[in-house]
Structure formats: structure tokens, C-alpha cells
Image (spheres, rainbow, N blue to C red):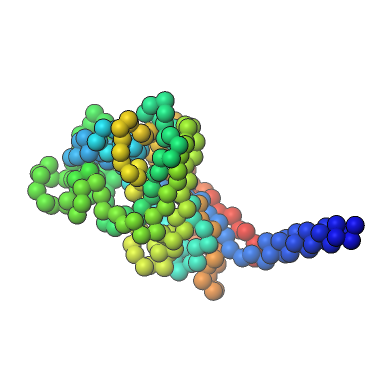
Length: 262
Ligand SMILES: [Ca+2]
């Protein structure tokens, strides 16, 4: 009986300590519930821009690769902040095949290392104003080296990249832990050129992949970046100069902010 009492007492103490710790956590959270720019690219049409597509296709099919670029403008209040967590989420809404992303499938989110332009092209509407498989901004209609990525399919690094592993069955959010990447942007260690999301490896036989909601989608939810952070000493964590809520239809991105505690 004494042992049981000790166990119960121990659990109670642990619970109280947990509550005290939670109450003393300082910081704030914000959700960027729409990307600032996003675009799918694919190796089938390497000089075609899809910046206005309602889908961000990710996957591979018989040697053809589909990747997605997603970027969020970070509010200035994150500058110099300590990022305690950051989660990138894409809404997987449309499977290519009944199998979707089967068990064991790895989908990787990487940090992009070169700026790029979203563009206004889409399936059936060719434009010369944005990112393609070959170029970070294909604007001249010329297959010269101008604006070429260093590597076709986008310039990115595997450093601090993050993976999730299937199975995934649509519709479902797919979420990557990207704390270190966002921390690097907040500290100024490297510029924010967003994320590149791809299948890894890009086998694709049989086809593996699907469509995710872009910020232009009217059917599926747009990309989302959730961040919790602690501001530098003396800097308010919820600056009033940043709009708390803006219209999805007109804003480059929507911010939902929440104070955790003070
Ligand atoms: Ca877009």
C-alpha cells in the first residue's frame, strides 16, 4: 500500500511540476496560414511556369519528377527571435493513384538556397514570368544559362531538411518539423528562400504522388507555417504593428497570433 501511495504522490508531484513549468513558459505562437508564394515544377515541362496552379504536385512517375516550392514572408518580429518550434504543413488533397503515398514513402522538405519568382503561369497558360524546373525565373523564352538554377529542379540543401514517412491517404495534412531552418532565417544565418518539397528517393515506378493545396486553391487548404518563438530581450512578442488577421483574398499571408504566457 505504501508503495502505491508513493507512486500516486509521485504522479501528483509530476503533474504539478508540469503545470508550473507550462505556466512559466514564455513566448508566443503565430501561424502563417497562407504561403507568400508557391509553385510546382516538373521535369516533363522544364520551361513551363505553374505559379498560378491550384495544385502543388509532389511525386514521381516513370522518371518524371514533380516538386513544390513554398515560401512564407516572415514577420519582422521574428528577427533575432529564438524559434522553439516550427512546423510546415501542406494539405494533401488529391492522390494521383489509389495508392497515394504508400507505406515507407519518404517526402522531404528542404531549404531552398536561391531566390525564385512565383510567376503567373498554369496548366494550359504558358507565361514567361516565373520559376520552372530549369530556371528560378524564366522570363526571356531563351534556353540560355540566364537565370538557370545551378542544378535543374531547384537549388536546395539537405542540411536541416526534414522528412515524413507514409502511408498518407488524402485528404490529410502532411507536416514537417522545420525548426532549425526557420531559426536560421530568424537569426539571419541565411536568407529565406522558402522550402522545396520532394519525394525521396524519386523512384516513381509505379507512380507515387499527389496534389497539395496551393495558395490559389479554392478547394484545398493552402500551405501553413506554425511557429512558436521567444523574442529577444526587450522586444514585444506580439507587436501591434503586424496585422493580426487579414483577408485571405487580399493578403499575401494570414497571421494568427497567440500569446502562450507572460
Ligand atoms: Ca502559387
